[in-house]
Length: 476
Image (cartoon, rainbow, N blue to C red; front, side, top):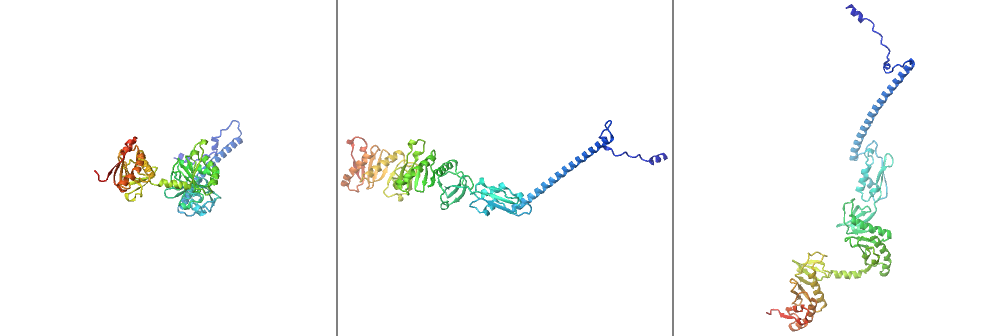
């Protein structure tokens, strides 16, 4: 017991000096103590430097994360305020400048960009602002719209206007088209800018504002003509008509129609047109009006190059003839009026038949469409021959042509006489003979004689068989 107490009361041995680094620094044989201690101190400095570097890295990471978190929060808050159009105090836009000469005011441009003073710089989306400008203001050239920083707190919007290429006719109105083939504005005819080329008959990709307007072929034709007119100084071209792509036409000062044909040689045709216009005006006057046919210039063979000018007064007479009815053909419950070219002019009822027009029944015909051909070849030949020959005779007044049976063709004269001609082998000869027979027939039976005159024997080539047999109305 006493031994244990005595052992506890014994003085503990003194701890050796702190030489922990000695475990990592092996003494070298014959190395002085001061050199060994120097190596120990160097090692301690390296360890402290490494610890300090690690602490700096950790602090940097913490700081970066804090900055990112702060930026995200600021960005979220800025976006929320921007969405509401509210101003912010931190990194706010102080001024918005507009550079460029367009039809839009600075206020309209800034509003369309959706940027505003007081908006956070962190919420400014320059690409989106450019897109908003081009979408809202179609006259702007999208390739030359830019948003950048004039200074740290100042934004700058640079704009340029897209040049107008033409005004394109639609079913309802006109669309102003830019040189980029985009629809820029819908206008009425009286609002088309002065001097703008008008395009009719074009095919469309889309008619929405800001979208591609003309299809590839229509654009190619119109651009070729406009570029050629600019290159050769044809400033009198007012209209391009491409309703029929194989009969392209342009109008000069809305007075002279130039027929170009297809699109294969348009540039050379414009060049040739510019060269011949001085002579045309010299011969027909500066206010000349009419049609210049240059369709022969539409190939590469220069030996075919020739133009034909027709004055407007001649065209008016031709147009009047085209509108003059030749006959009214029975087509179901209505009558279809055609001209000498077999083109449909209109469809009418009995009470609206043109006065004095020949009526045709029993003809073979197509569907009645205005401007399209109506009769088949044989029916047209019969009607055309009979009407033309009757018009040459002063006393043959045809009211009705019945070709229900092509072997029993008959005429009904205005005076009431029915003439049986038979087949269509000698129609001209029969009408001439009818003109010669009528005076005698009327002398013997009166000019209002009704009945049937059979002239079928005139249908062969033997004059000995030619005779007309008259049967009065009511005779057996």
